Image (cartoon, rainbow, N blue to C red; front, side):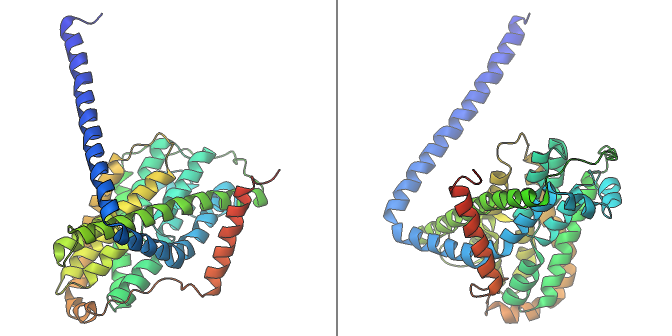
Length: 370
């Protein structure tokens, strides 16, 4: 039985939670009302921003990510993942204290782009191959920019130097893997898997991978369009109008690609300072995409958000000494920002990927196999 003091403490805790919940609800309601008014008053800007988001999805997001997401789902569900995991098992088990099946997931997260690691972790969770706690820890260092984005788009396209892109990529991935190793120091060593897990046949694993990637890529594109439209609305209304470092920081916190473009156009050493932070923090758009991919699972994301900040600081520390001496070269190209995407809309690769995506959407719309 609780005494009067204990009852007061319990009631006080509940009352405090209710007050905080009410404040959050009222604040969100006020912001929603303001946003509705802004949408009605600035419909043209929102439309332009949404169209730009759709263009980004068609030209960059789908061609760059969709195939990797299909591949990650196929690997996680089939015996192919077991084969690929064997040579990576010692590092995965002893350095990152994770089951061997996470080896391909770590590699894919380093080469496939931001949401691919989360998609692979979600597939492994669905298969029961990893626990929730292991997934939370792996997510902290499996959220990485892809080489094509960092080296080609940022390095060659925005900064005019593939060397600068290579330095950024090396610092970015080194920071991520080092952070993963440090987070795993006190984690228990996972047991060896002596019993081979039951995997789906290859055709079924491929179909499941396509279905999973299709739903994932649609969710990603939805967030890209939303944040593109939201950024255009803020820019048209004033908070992001004009130019300067503050505007660049605000845009970079919302969306990483646009933020890096804005940072590359700044004079002096600002690109060397801001771009490493943006690519490792990833922006709210990417963070919401990852939350959507892992929705419906009992995961806690507090440590993941803190690691985004830590990753940004580590990448800046590792890359700054090398980029600092390149600031003159970067400054020459900063006024001629011309980002280069991984694929252009008329390439055969893009055409094939879009055909696969269309077929997958039609398959899902008709209910799959009867």
